[in-house]
Image (tube, rainbow, N blue to C red; front, top):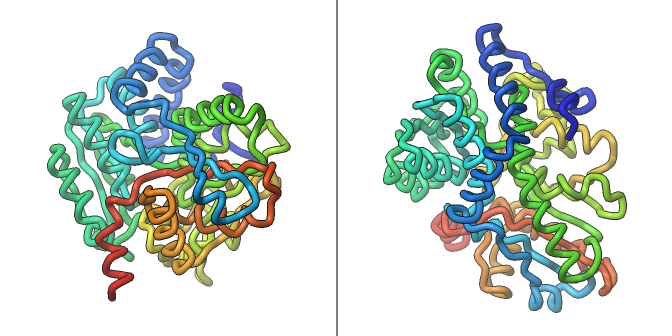
Amino acid sequence: MANEQVKAGYFGEFGGSFVPPELQEVLDYLGEQFLKYKDDPEFNEEFRYYAREYIGRENPLTYARQLTAKWGGAKVYLKREDLNHTGSHKINNVVGQILLAKRMGAKRVIAETGAGQHGVATATACAMFNMECVIYMGAEDTRRQALNVFRMELLGAKVVPVAKGQGRLKDAVDEAFADLVQNYKHTFYLLGSAVGPHPFPTMVRHFQSIISEESKRQIIEKEGRLPDAVIACVGGGSNAIGAFAHYMDEPSVRLIGVEPDKAPTLTQGVPGELHGFRCLVLLDEQGNPQPTYSIAPGLDYPGVGPEHSQLKLSGRAEYAAVSNEEVLEAFQELSQTEGIIPALESSHALAYARKLAPSMGKDQIIIINLSGRGDKDVEEVFRMLRG
C-alpha cells in the first residue's frame, strides 16, 4: 500500500480519526513510527524471525479432502491459522505491534478482547518482552471464555471485566480507549482488529497480510493457479483483511466475508462513526450503536473495519450472514470430517462455504481462512448442544 494512502487514513469515505486533540497527537506519532519501521529491513527481519521461531509460520494450506468429497463441487483448502502459537491469527498482528511498542519505549500495554484470543496473544507477547499488560474484556465474554481469562492471568496479564452496556466487545473497546486517553504518555494500545482511528486499521492490515502472502504462494505451488474464492469470517475484520490483502488486485478471485445474522454490519449497516473512525455500523432509531449478539464473541461488534466498509461499497468483496444454527452445524462437521475443531468465529466462514462449494465446478478452488482453533469454545458449545 502506498504511503500516501497510509497517511490519509481513509479507504474511500471510511476511516479517519475522530479523537480528542491530545490523543490525536499520540496517534500521529504512532503513525509516524509505523511508517518509519514498516519498511525497515532490521524491523522486518526481526518480525520474520518471531513469525518463524515463535508463531510457527508459515502454517499449512491444507487440502480438505474429506470435506471436498462430502460437499461436492469445488476443491476446499484451509489456511491453518489455528496452528499458530496461541491458537489463532491474532498473534501475527500482536508480534508486529509489540516490536513497534518496544522501539517506541513502551512499558505498559493495554488491549481489548472479545473471544479472548487477542488477549491471550497480547499477554503472551508481553510476557516475552517483559511489559505490563492490562486486558479489557466484556463481563459476559469473561463468562463465555473463562478458559481464556485464566490463560491471560497465567501469562501475567491483569484482566479487567467490563460490565457496562452489554458487557461485550464494544464495551471492552470503550474502556480501552478511555484508558488510553488517561494514560497515553506511557501506554501502548495494542488494538487487535482492523478497526479504530487511523493508523490502527492500516497497521493491523499490514501485519495480518502475511496470511494471504503465504496462501497465494502456497495455492500456486499446489494447484498452479489462484483460487476462485477466498472466504473468511468478519467481526471487526482483521483475519479477513489479512486473508484478502494479496488478492485485492486479482479480479478473478472472489473475496467473501461472512458475519453473524444477529450482527449483520456489512449486510445491513449504514455509514456512521464508532470508536473514533467512520465505517458501516448498526444504529438504532436514536443513532446509537445497536446491541448485537453472536455465539462467537469475537464477531460480536456493531461496526466493522473501514477497509471492509469500502470493499462492500465498491463491490470488490461480497458479504453474507449466517445463523447460529448453521455455525454450530459447520463447527461439528469440520470436527467430524477432517479432525479439526474450529473456532466458532471461523465456523461462520465454513457455514457459508458449505453452501457455496456445491454450486461450483470440481475444477474450481475455495480457500477458507481457518482463523482459530476451537478449544476455547468447546465448553460453551457443549452447553448449547446438551442444553
